[in-house]
Image 1 (cartoon, rainbow, N blue to C red):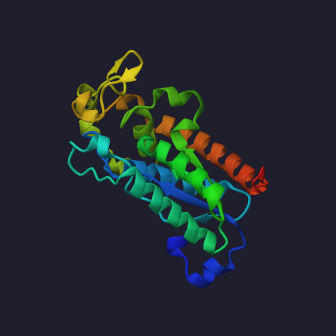
Image 2 (image 1 turned 45 degrees about the vertical axis):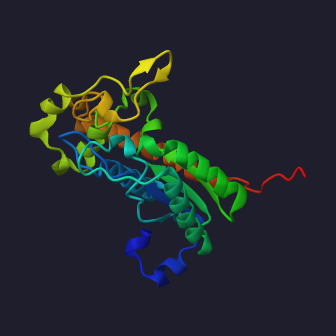
Image 3 (image 1 turned 30 degrees about the vertical axis):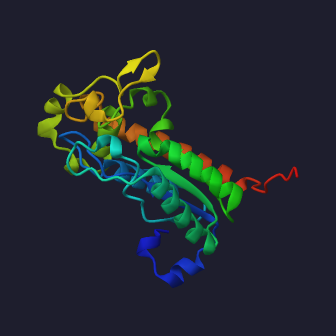
Length: 245
């Protein structure tokens, strides 16, 4: 059930304690992909898993602005601090739990959110009346994950599969020409760069030409399977916390 599309009486009738909270960002994705790429991809994976799961799942409206200051030099990028982001996610999960949806998977589409989501999920689980775990779709696609950059092969492939009209195909070559091959500027295992503009001319990392629709279909299938398996585990898990006082 998509919470934003349901009436309150329909929401009240759903018999489940499971919820999916898509989490993305609004940030540059090169000259060829939309600012909402991370939010769109997170929603798509959440929707596909909710449909494939053998049971009821509430799908919450997405968190559309995340931890994205690393893209601040590119127009249209929006961001909040990690503290604000964590508080917003935590309070959203608390409101879901208030209605009985107290086992929540945070379906993430943005690399910059990963650390904050892991931290807030732990805080929710330890201190609140709910259980939360983060799931980042591009980390759950098998060997494809090694090709993850930014607005590169994986994100472009999934967009071509689910929202092809949003990909500016006439700018794909331009996107590759201004891209970097890897994330960051590394010396002695240390990333010297804090912002993406320090190492990529147009915001792209990787080669979007390698992300066709067929690959996008495979990515969606793999991410969906992984998320369904996670939902099954979350539904069955004993979430009572050990007390060693």
